[in-house]
Length: 502
Image (cartoon, rainbow, N blue to C red; front, side, top):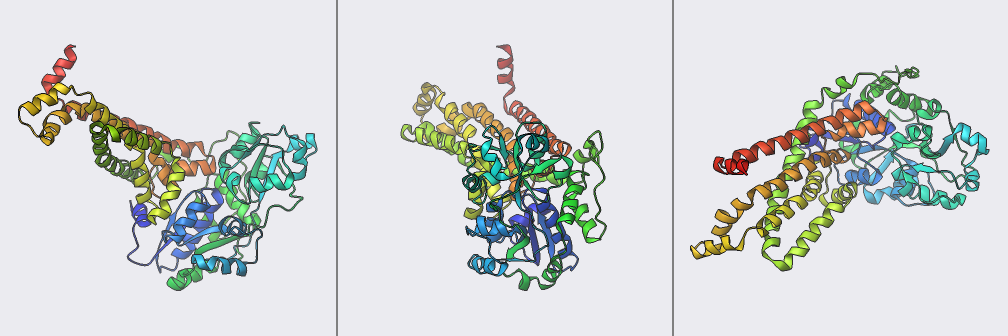
């Protein structure tokens, strides 16, 4: 729970929180920054990994929940500042100043976007440049979701090169090369430092219209960080110019092809022992067995974090949902509104809701995750409460009134006991749903089993994915079994015997 608390509560001492996006290179660079800063002993340094896209990282940075993260000049100019060009660093910083941010420490390499195809297909169609694509409307594009939505991504690219393709399929970057190799798509977006360029033998298409700007790697940080933690910042600043494009590609390959942990890759670079990756094994096996990953040292922490996310949000849903269901059952005028709103809330995409909640709450981690999960758990609780109370025969409440019971006494002594099983069924459904939905919390640094799933997606590592997914499934089954036992214990023995005799 320490990481969970570190990113959700204000720090009481000297603390430095390093964020990263959800792809291999960002994880590695953040680890290098974290390990470098930690050597000074000036602050408690924490890496908050896999925080989704640029918008989420920017919100977390401006809210003060992280202090620094690896970014690229092209992204800062186009995506954050909405400029039509990439100016020098001094001009970027002048534009970032009103946001309380600064870009510093050029790391030494450019990681630009590019499009790539299977080499044999590109050769057969004589495609070498992006401008050649307009003559081949049959090609299927599979692009990362962020690239499709970016200002400097698909929309501008399509216009610049007059591409005939419709809006392409969204595809996670970690799966793109495999989808290309399996002929599920024909064109993908890549990063120029991707480790898999050589392994999969793809052809990188020349950007002959020079659409993509330079994406020089820098550190985007709070403007007060160098003065607030001067020794830590001096250590971080020593990284300037130390990471070349070849070195970055080697580190990406070590993580993605050899399955070396991000921490070990970063430590190897800082120790000067980084090397070219060994050839991948012919059987495709990754370093470390599935069982090692499943029972890894982080299992206990992730379990506690996941349980906290599920049950804290479930408690909030019960506190709000049961009264709303009661109100919908009592007031015909409110029924359609309450049931309609809770139904609509269930349809909001989870990552979109999280992205909205970060600036609203001024936080990443537990607080926005709690709100999002509580919202998603409302529908079954509200509907079951409403249905259970509406199904109580009117004669029961009329008899209670004839006996002199007040409406509150009738609710407490008659209606809720009769509706209990149906309400509990709704709460059980909400709990089981929340176990799976809670995996999205990893995208904003709230921990849980989603951390393994996010890492597995970034590395296209099925073993790591399963090491996160299987505990989720087991936990869901365990919670359902616990609710069934609880319902049995709360049901009077005589009623259980009547139910069995039917």
